[in-house]
Length: 378
Image (cartoon, rainbow, N blue to C red; front, side):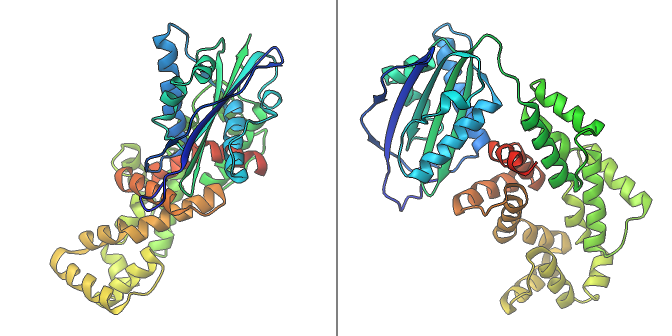
């Protein structure tokens, strides 16, 4: 997330190794200027770094490292802490924060690279490369990017038995997902909660768990009912709700589509829009943009309505830069409990425009940041 208008920041690497409790010497390589880079999601950055790390190990005839969620949390928290400190230093406590039982541990850190270049930078540094190729079988990866600065952490561990995701962390994540996606918070003993926790503990990726929530019939029905009530100011008729659910189950519609399509109907035009062009455009502004139209906007969309019809102008408003930005901002508030910065908004707007709002929301739900926040909420 480095805008072209900012000066390049320095890129640095530091590595350290612990074997059976003994600390080996650290490592610092010469800084290089960084190039501007587009924002990436934490989950995408972590996936890229894991793939590149294991590619190096494969080229050297070594088994791949297994990503451990509890180690991800340690690495992610430290990357964020380095940003907060404004400096690049090792986590003095990483060896006690990662799951116990290790016989060897190591840490690589870096600043100023990109998710696609940092592993190669570590590769070119003998100490960091030794950590990547070391006698380890577990890894945690942290990536934090804000205000044009990118911090990276790799925590390595050697375990006789790989740590499973902690039940408490999995339970917190599941309860948070129920609350944020389905709008209800069941008891920990609930059969559904235990089923999801068991899947996470068994190693099912968070992306699959998140997709399970946003692709569930419960969530789809919730969004259908909300669309009826919000757009048409009434409850759905059973046949209409069943039809929309069948379309979503068949993959012909996403949960957010019902709201958008209802805005094109005669019912919305005649009731909320009072059967007039001005009333309809005003109602669209209020629903989609949350504000009244200005004179120029009213004139523009009135002409567009006459020329292209309702579907065209609803899609134009729905996919406008302003509207998608608001949906990203709302998702950050709902799921991460914070505001999105400009680079994050730009990245997720592209995801939502390309793949839909539900996909954007699902990916944020699957992020390491959401997992970490869930542990503080439940």
